[in-house]
Structures are given as structure tokens and as C-alpha cells.
Image (cartoon, rainbow, N blue to C red; front, side):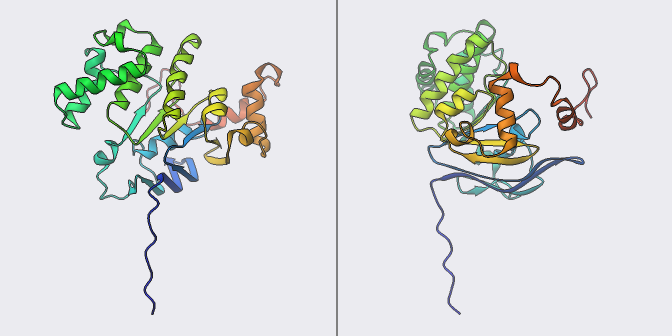
Length: 282
């Protein structure tokens, strides 16, 4: 019998998601997702609220534990029970909707604490890296400020600088502009646009269609826990093949010309498991 040569790993593949499922109780939020992200790619994930976008993103670094399927990051199967997920996370930065800065630490210290604690850099090296990345996001003059003294857009840019200071191979963005005043969105998107131009590998969950069309190498449209379309932004956003994609984009790009209440029933179905306002979840 001729021995089989094992496949050569593709080192350009940063994230490989195969057959991913995720359930919360009886609700199946992800239903067999397949997505691959290569080195240097910017992949924007779009879709209606409740479609599973953020859950997919959080499965990449195991902030959510998949129910089935595999997620391979930088050649490591993070769904393997023996995986050292903390080691993988050292190479994966994440920027959340809410900035999650330490309110009792200065901007500079927010950007050095993980460097010294996790990467074991000296205080001097960590400060040098943090200063460089704060300059990179246009906040070099705010190193001694406290988070409460900054606008929401500035706080989000500090969060990006903090992530960059860990020298990640992959950056995950979970709707990074959704909590911002509209006038502050542009500053954050400008920073992300420059990161893309510099070759940073990014997975971005977003509602910013103009950003996705201009910056993304690929756009993934999700609905009801599945990938409906995955392709170049000119195709997915500019000339979508699927009726559901066209319906979504019409509502997002031309919201004043839709039938009021047309998606109320569908929205209610997707959010049926959400806790009621004021009622704690269990």
C-alpha cells in the first residue's frame, strides 16, 4: 500500500472555519458556517441584527464555545480540548462595540498593561510600543488622559491602539462604530482603513456598508445563522445574487423607501430568545 503524504499546511490561511454550529439552548444561532480568511485579507461580515454575526466572530477566539464544527486559527484548532487558547489569543486582537478600557488607568497604561503582563515586555519597551501605536491612531497627545476625558471615538481608537500593541496577526472588530456618535464614526473607520492598507488581517462585523464596499477584500452576508453570500464587495453589495441580500441592502441603503413593519415578524422571530428589557437573563 502506497503511503499517503499528509497535506502541506497553507500558512497563508489565518482563519479556517468549517461546519460551525452554535446553539443557545434550543436556538441554533449558527448553522454550518464555512469561512476562510487569508493573510492580509479584510473580511467584512454584514447582515441583520440577530443573524449570528457577532457569535461567529466570538467563536474565532473561543469567547463563545462552538457546539460543532472546527475553527482553526494560525494553524491551531482552537476547538480541540487540548488547545492552549491563551497562547492563540496572544496573536489575536479584538475590538468590541463598547471600548472596555480600564477607567482607573491612563490611556498609556491601558496600552501597556497586557504587554507587560502577558508578553512580559519591560516597562520601557511596552511604553515605546504603546506610544507608537497611539501615534498611529492619532492620539499621541492623549497618553496621560483618563478614558472618561475622551470622546467615544477617541476611546475606541485607544482600544485599537491597545490591540495593536500586542502585535497581533489577526484583528477582530465587533461593530466597532455602533456605539459612537455619527460625527465620530469617520475617525475610527479612517484608522481601520489605514490598517487595511498596511496589510493587517481583519475580520470586521459591521453595518458600515460604504466601509465594507471600499475596504473589504470580501464581504460575507449572513442571515438566520447561515452564510447567504460570500464574495467581492462589488458583487455582494453592488450586484447581490440572492433575494434576501437584495432585501437587506435595500433596507440599509434606502431606508425611507421600504414598507413599514414589513420585517417586524421576522425580527421578532430572530430575537425570541432575548431577555425582556429590565428582566435579568438566566
